[in-house]
Length: 179
Image (cartoon, rainbow, N blue to C red; front, side):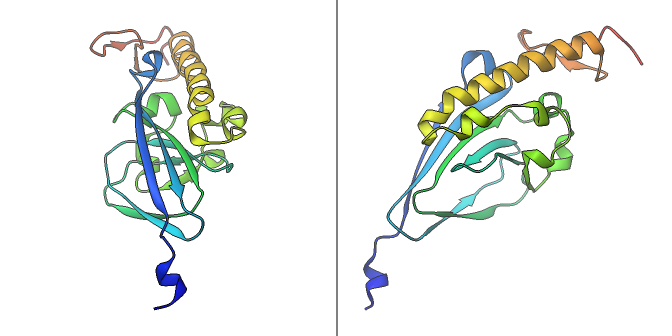
């Protein structure tokens, strides 16, 4: 038996948190995952859930994890810190400014996405030391984006129909300007 066989493998600690109340109509949850251990790689099986996630891994720029129709395995180094915000199924298009179908079964850097995501300022989120510390700055960035997105949709009519953020069971609202 070699020493490599005796070295403990990395472990994953995954936690989900309710989205802050002002974001709960758009976001299903916030979550964090920490890979513990001194070395090695943790293989995490991600199951399809039809949701789009905004994901931060360590101090890398964020990515969008599109809605998946099949499972995939991601490999995370020991010591990795991951933070995410999961959108409700069907809510991403209005917030992100792109159809969810463009993200199907893909992991896409946010910098490569045209639309509303390009204007979000995630620097303060990335600067945080760990997954737990990222949740509040992430909520602030997303809340500002949700507020801006819905107010500009109503004012400028960028989409044929938008969801009213304060509507109880979601009601369609017509934009003021029609093309």
